[in-house]
Image 1: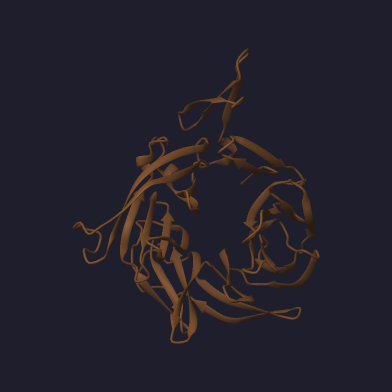
Image 2: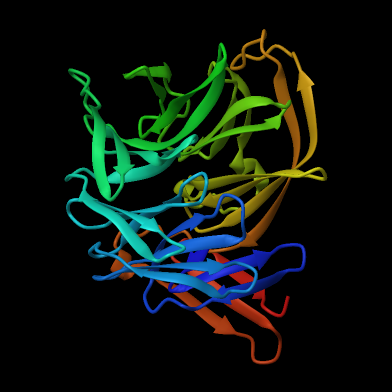
Length: 370
């Protein structure tokens, strides 16, 4: 993860962290290489740069001075890791494509005045990608050094709806076999809590109110029951697992972790989610609105068919026995004015203890030797 101008790589097993300090300015975005221990980070600055670095050695691999203005909003590697795409914080939300190994700019385009919230490359074509955001979903293609928009879908406003600001906030491709070929459809989450799909040139809702509020994270995985599942998480503090037909298989409530203060309800909003799966363990890596980083370790996974009001009785249900560990603590500000948000710290005169207090009315103690 990043904080200020530093990239942090934390090993929870050894409780050791390494710091990448190659940036001169604050970091605002991050992307991970799909197969190697390589990460890309983008700056928030009038003339921002992108650094690609090794998470084990903390050595810089490449530095790219971008054509964006004010900062880099999003970064994403292609599935084959050949390309890196960046989205700018400028008024026209510029898009830039990189051959990052050669530090070479391949294409630059302005996307338009609507904010962009996510990027995803096509799983089988590294020269095609999709962006989604406020009121729109757009498809892009790289040909040589020319970047063109191949399709643009504007999300219609529902007549009479009080909230007209429809935003598509996160998305992922889901693959399935159709005859002798493999097809790929987009699954998309929204600020209304709905999950929709884009396939065959059509956009349609497949699950209304999958969450009570905005969906921030959406993943497609095979780590449960060795079948394809869709995992969503959002501002309501829930992680939900669905089958491809969007039938609910299981859900986890972050409040049950009992590691986050309930003095500020928005603290439980899930901002980022990753899934970790090995022969020995499965876990959720969770970033919260309050700045906390948690790991939810799955101790037991049981498949049942117990009747449940929310879960389809004809669909196998997954029950988890969880253990939550907090790796990073922070303070949730109850003050919307950023200039008034304050955290006070003090260091013990003799012991390796640091104390912090914020306007969330919480006092926290840290052992910084460990």
